[in-house]
Amino acid sequence: VSSLMLDFDTHTMAKVLKVPNEKFRDKVFQGLENYMTTLKKELGHIPDRTGVKQRYIRHMEETLQRPVEEGSLTPHEQAVLTELTERFSQKDWLFKKGGLIRDAVKIHGGVWIGETALKAPGGLIRITLRIRENTIDDLAISGDFTFYPQDQLAAFEQYLKGTSMDPAALKQAIEAFYAANAVQTPGIETEHWLKVFGQLREAVAKHS
View: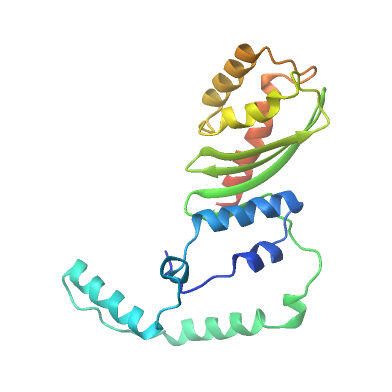
């Protein structure tokens, strides 16, 4: 299932989503900007809807080599559509407080934003992560643990970008960076990093 969007307000979408914190929200917005496009974004203006529909149908007919037949909703589909429209238009649904705060949000196709935390013996590890096709696309690490040399934490984030979320690949990358840069994280071992990344894998799988 896909859509052909004339325009889309990424600012509002990122603002209304129930997410853990503002850093996560910023990552969602960046993901929407990077991985979602519209006809307005590509063309610089919103094209005529009728013209877009006609061109789309024509290209579909050329690709499929058969005429496109216009259909209509069945009575059941129309009833469901009416019910959902009424439900999602009610003020008690639109302004409902509380609800689910998602630990993983799907941006587009195989692109996800997720956040999780782990209390390890050496302190709290918090990771905000963008995953693309099961690969680390962007990463922010924070917490109250000791990472020495301190200036290598940002380098660690950069090093892990492009790494598969597969545990074996992560283990190899983490251990290689530690060895090459003489990194010390008292109370935090490779197993703790693997566990926190594993929590994000599980969050994505849960919402898939």
